[in-house]
Image 1 (cartoon, rainbow, N blue to C red):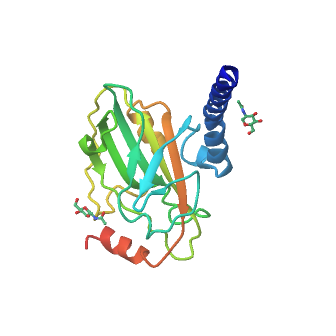
Image 2: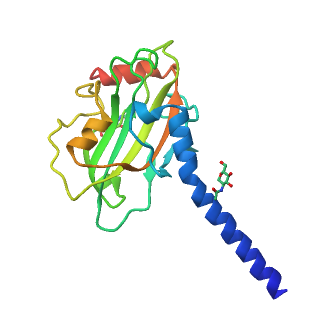
Image 3: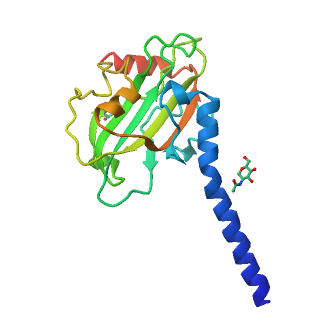
Length: 209
Ligand SMILES: *[C@@H]1O[C@H](CO)[C@@H](O)[C@H](O)[C@H]1NC(C)=O
Ligand SMILES: *[C@@H]1O[C@H](CO)[C@@H](O)[C@H](O)[C@H]1NC(C)=O
């Protein structure tokens, strides 16, 4: 009896170890398959970032969501190391389309100096805007990346509200990371989305209305 209990615990342990050993592979595989590496970052994060939209809708490795589903700021969770600051980026490398991304990247959300994992205490450099892929522009990738900072930073970027396009097109995650010495993203995730009937509202919002 005791033996079988121990065996059970042992197997559960093995299964858990296996899952965590393979999360790294999964993140790397999906980031490379959908070419987020190299289009956005030179190498994949080690972990998935937990991103949850309204109605418990979780972002999972490249799944397709609709602009309607992602219209409001999601909850983003991670296990923080104590007393560190983080930067969170959400970006679309496929603006205005993945085939001809002449505005690569379009910045959707940028929060710096997040103490531990409390986004509400971070500095909002660009407020969250949901997906607004133009009609017939196909699937866009919406990529979340979490970086550990080397201490508290002084950001020189203009503060951009959720009703402004200012400084959003032609953003480059890799350049931003270099500028602030952010090395590699510790966690990441992405979904894909194409036009739906909510997009005109996003565009209207971005034009200041
Ligand atoms: C991880 O996944 C691969 C297949 O993707 C599998 O062959 C391997 O056994 C798994 N476990 C570990 C610990 O790598
Ligand atoms: C835009 O920002 C304002 C002010 O923070 C907020 O009240 C509003 O809900 C936001 N709109 C959207 C669509 O996120």
